[in-house]
Structure formats: structure tokens, C-alpha cells
Image 1 (cartoon, helix red, strand yellow):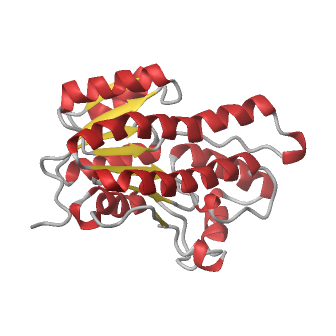
Image 2 (tube, one colour):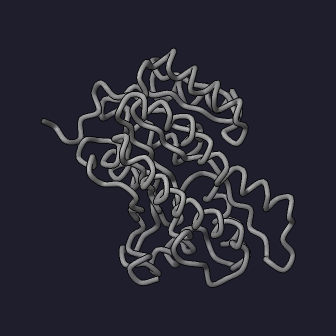
Length: 261
């Protein structure tokens, strides 16, 4: 038995058009799984699906809207048959000082980063229960465990802490049905949106972006910034039979930040 073989499995990756979601989806596909990507807008989804392969399915919807999630489950069952893996990779971070936080934006983050995870876990959880097996993988962050020294992340840290506890509670409730629920907690990762932020920070500091990245990488034990590909092995492990007796855990491909943070 190949403990990391996903042949015969199928995965729905919510947030699949994003930097981390797309890379994880590719890793699951390379391990043998059939893939359906879900996200908010059609064009990025179509582009991501085409990049991953002609047989990759896609679905447009908002995971924070229950009707959309119900439609996603129905579409996944029609296109993939029995779904065995759910990846929640949706969400965003809007940095705001806590003293000046925009409450409407805070609520949007709660919806995108928590409500969507709960709704997909609810409806795919029913599908998994009926089949007696399933894997739920939530994208959390090191910021669910440790805060930042500077301001701006109160909303993001709060939502990722909630993702961690939701992961544990769902693991407690779903384990009896043969369903595992785990999370991945990366450090800051070099996705295209983050690179744009790094460029702005480097400019403000009067240094090149390469110099900025070296500074940031030197602050963690591995002495480099994280890449999206650094999450793939963890995701495949959590999706595969190798982790069938692991549930309620948050794994940190973070270059060692949580070891010293």
C-alpha cells in the first residue's frame, strides 16, 4: 500500500484560484486525485483549471453563502462522484490598526476566513458521513498561534485562531464518522499578492525587495522565506491514507517560526 497515493480519490479545493490553493490542488492532482476548484470569480478559476490540466473541474461560488455551498456539493458529486477530500484555502487579510479598525471589513474577514470554513465543513461533512470517510484540510496560519509584534493583524489573527479551534472541534465531532479534520499553519508565503506587499515594504524601508526578503528570512531558523510549494507535502500527507489516524492537529510548515515565536 502506498500511503501517499491519492489515485481513486477526489478533492474539492475552495479558494483554488489563489496562490496557495492552486499549488495545493496541483500537488493533490500529481498524487493522483481528481480535482474541482472553487472560487469567487470565473476568469481566475478557468485560468487555474487550464494551468492544472484539461480534466480539472471548476465552480464559481461564495463559500460564505450557504446556498452556494449546497450548490457546490451538488456540482462536485455530479462532476467527481464521491468526494473524499475538502481543502479550505479561501480567505484574505486586510491589515488595520486595532484602534482604527473598520468593523465592516472585520466582518468581511470573519465571513471569508471562518464562516466559509464552517459552511463547507457542514455540507461536505454530511457527504463524508454518508460515505463513511473524508478528509478536511483547513488553511490556517502561524498567526492562529502567535501574534505579530507590530499592529495591523488583529482581525487576521482572530480569524486564524478561530480556524484552529474550529478544526479541533470538528475533529471531535466528525471522528466517529471516519472523517479527519486537520489544518496547515504556514508562515508568510511568497504568493504573488504577498510579493507586491513585500515590494511596498522594501520601498518604504529604502532597500531592494531582495534585501527585504533576506532580512525576513534571516529571522527564522530556516533562514529563508516560505514558498507555496513548501505546503504541498503537508497537504498531500493530510489528504492521504498516511494520516488516517491523525485528526484535530495543526501542522506548521513555517521554517521554524513557531519553534522560536
